[in-house]
Image (cartoon, rainbow, N blue to C red; front, side):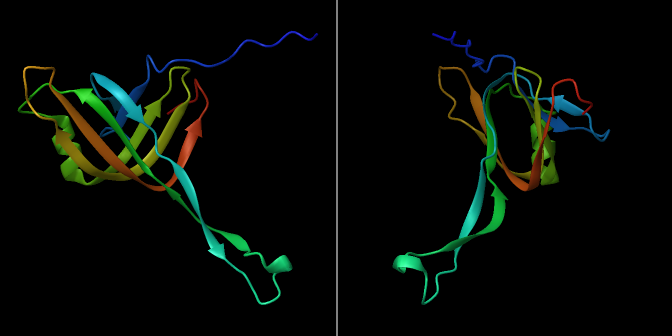
Length: 145
């Protein structure tokens, strides 16, 4: 019986969400991120059924691809110089998710939501959401940003 290879699965510890700074290609990691949601990828399916489609089944052709929303949750630390407010007010920007193995997912997008969660006797947190615009790019670990 052949030996089963070990899994390559990993946990998300060490992942980062970065926002491009003043220097193009340089991403500043957001502090104290607790969860990251990468953008999804989807494609429209355009119906192309005609009067003689085989076996009376609907036919489809591939349409436009679309990037979804990305986001993160973080420990919220109030600051009069909150860099996330500056990034939100800029409207659009470039963003990078660095996975624990060093692979990077880079995308342009619109910063659509910055929500500070309810303030209680528990840990304060905030959530940020970004709508991907255009194609996201994956870079191998160790590749220049």
